[in-house]
Length: 292
Length: 292
Image (tube, rainbow over all chains, first blue to last red; front, side, top):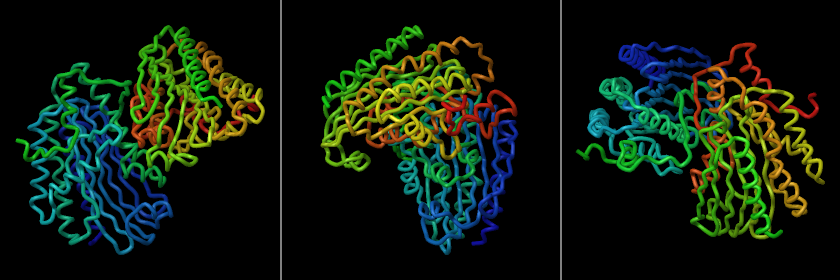
C-alpha cells in the first residue's frame, strides 16, 4: 500500500467530515497543527465547542519514527520502525436526545507488518429504537458491500470492547470494531474509506431528528450523569487512551474525547418506569438488526 | 494486635470525623450500611452532599474472607485468608477557596503478615501559602510525636504517589503517604490514631477560613476544570480505586471519591499572571515546612 495515498485520503475524510458537521451545526472548527516531536510527521486536531455540539474533535495524524521500549512492548509485531496514520473523532452533542458518537480509522505499519483498524460506536442517553436499528443497518450495509467484512463479527468485537466491566454495562449501543485487518490491504482500504466517508450519513439523522427537541432539567442531569460513564470507560479501559497516556502522546489530543462536563452522584438510580431507566435495558449486547 | 480493637477505633474515628464535619457545615451525612457478599463483615458508607461540602464521603469498612486469585496476585504477602479494616474519606467543598482533601487509614492482615497504611493529602484550587505550610506543619507535628514516623519520608512517598504522570503535575500539594508499616504494630497504631483523630484539626482551618469567600465565575470554572485532574488521577493511577474496580468491590463506595461535577476543556491554559496560573507553581514536590 502507498502510505501517502492512505494518509492523504484520511486527511480528505477529516476535511469532508468537518465540512458536513460545520454546515449541519453552523459551528466552526478550531484547528491546532502539531508536530510529532519524537519523529516525523504530526497532526491536525480540530475542535468544535459551545454550540449544538457541546464539545467534539475530529483529529487527523500521520506519524513515523522509531518506537520506544514502552511502545514496542505494547504493540503487535516486531521491530522499532513504525508508521501510523488515522482519523479519530468524538462528538458530545448538547441536546441529550442526540447520542454521543465516536469513530476511528487507522493504518499502521510496523517493520513489514501492515494493517488497518477502526470502528464506530454510539452512546445515546435516550434510546429511540428505530434510530438505533437504522444506525446499525447503515453500518451493516457498508460491511455487506465488502468481501470478508462481516458486520456481526465486528459488531460482537465492538460490544466486547466497549464494555464497562465494573458497571456491567456497555458504554452505549455499539456499532463495529475491527483491528489487525492485514489481508488484501487494498480491499480493506476501500472498506475503511466507506466507513470514513459514510460517517456523515450515519450521524446526520441522529443529529437532525433530535437536536431541536425540548429539554427539561432531568434530561440534562441524566446526560451529565451518564457522561461520567464515558469518562470511566475512557480512563479505565480504552486502549488508545491509556496507550497515549503511557507513551507520552499529545495529552490534549488524547483527552479531547472526554465530555465537556459531567457529574458523579453517589448511588444514583433512575426512577422505575422512567425514560432514564429505559436506557439500562439497552446497555448490553443486542442484535439490533434482527430486533425489528 | 487485637483487630476488633482496631476496627472499633476506626469506627469511632469515622464517628468523630462525621460529627465534626456535620457541626462545622450544618450538613447531615446519609449512611449506607452494606454487607461484604464474598466473606464476613461490611461497611458504613457515609455521604454528604449539596451544601458547603458539595460532595464527600467518610467510609468505614471491616472485611474478612478468602482472597480470589485476582486479589491475591495484586497484594503483598502470601496466603488467601485476609482481614482488612479502614477509614477512607474524600471531601469536595463547594467554595473553590477550600481545598479538596483525602485521608485514609487502614489495617490489613494476610496470613501472618499484618500492617498499617494510610495517608492524607490536599488538593487546593487556589493556594494560600501560609495555610499550606500550616497544614504540613500540623502533619509533621503528629509524625514527630512518634518514633520512626519520619514526616519527610512519608511526605516524599506522598509526592511520588499523587503524581499525574501524563500531566507532569502532582494532584495537589501533598501531605503524607505510608504503607506496610509492620514493625511494632502497637506503636504504629498510636500514630495512625493520631492521624485519624487529628483530621478535624487539620481540615477545619482550611474550611473555616475560606468557605465564606466571595466567588466569581472564573473561580468556579477553574475548580470544575481542575476537578477533571482529580478524576484523571483516580481513574488512571489510584491503586485503591483500580484495585476496587478490578476485584469487583462495591463500586459506589469506591467511586464516591470522584467530584460531583467537573469539566474538560480542550487545551485550556490559565492567563499569564492570573491566580489560576499561580496554582501550577505548586503542583510539584515542595518542601513546605522549610519554605517559610
